[in-house]
Length: 234
Image (cartoon, rainbow, N blue to C red):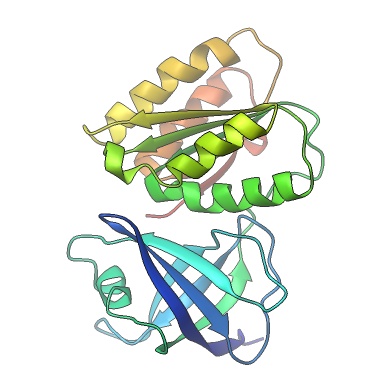
């Protein structure tokens, strides 16, 4: 069965950091019902063989009117992201979806540990917004790794969440040295929480070079691979 593709109108454009932009889109034909953590495929009229398909996770839960909030970084030389940076309110693009299985488990019976690198925080932020809209009271730790202090996404929002919601802890890290430094910093933070402790629910999102070593660490610590939910965007 062919996927359903529809037009979507750009409602707003907002720069969140020097290198990260937010687009709010409104699908024209019908609303897209999705779970936090899922993504849509944008069909961009660029590249050697258009359309160029690019996946972007929703950054906020669904709304009654159907807006989709997408967030992406501008990749140097990236055909897709550079095209998206030309869009302005009133423009149209095409998309399909939703897709993906990087969603919260039905039962949150253990501490939830969310680990994200840079824009890997986007689907996790969507999950957090839904959890706390539903008055989630369990223990949640978010480790967010950015390439620079000014690139810490949703920093003030997450600080406020940590102050106002008992059980939510937020650990921002800056790894200007790249993926490996981000992995090393994250290891140093989570080792005391994992080694010899009751199992948690780990969810990891970021580049493959960031996610795979962390997933391997959880597996070495006694987790089944299926217990470690991951999403990569490269």
